[in-house]
Amino acid sequence: MKNILLTFILLVGITSLSKAQNSLFSFNYAVTVPMGNTSDFIDQASGRGFVFEYQKFINPHVTLGLEAGHTTLYKREDEKVYTEGTASLSGVQYRYQYSWPILATVNYYALRTELFRPYAGFGIGTMASHRKIDMGIFSSDKTHWQLAIKPEIGTLIQPNPNMAFRIGIKYLMGFESNDLAGQSNLNFNFGIVFIN
Image (cartoon, rainbow, N blue to C red):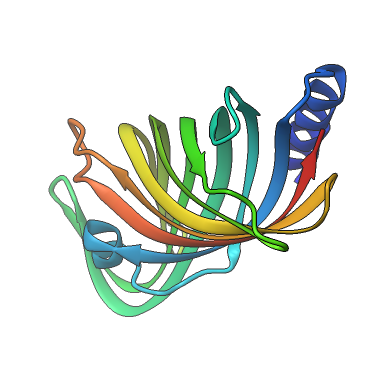
């Protein structure tokens, strides 16, 4: 929790120091639905996620930016057999997967109507996936780094020129690495956007 707070303070500080016009800073709550290989490990949706975004308009429709986030997936597995190397254990497992995507992004924003401003975006970067299995007094955990991409669609709901609300959906996909199959999930984001 301390790291989350420090990250938030750092991002807010950087944003407040940059006096650039036409930039967006947003904090989003993320609901994650595991897909593909991720759902083979944990198949339950989770509301334990957040995303920080900073975007700068390079023209009236296009932004370049950075995105960093965190999601936690959790599942309790009854009476599973877990094998690592030559050892096999049987019992109740507690499975966790923590993901930290860090992406460079580009978004296209359509013209604003009275209240809505739809957008589509793409991101590329890296994602750290930390997998942990607890079984009794035994624990196994590893962190894996993967190349990641993210298409996204959504809309800003902008009641005034300096603030908006974000509703969006993104598909985050990490490509296969040496020791972990490709990971993917669907994120539903609900956030607040500050515009300067």
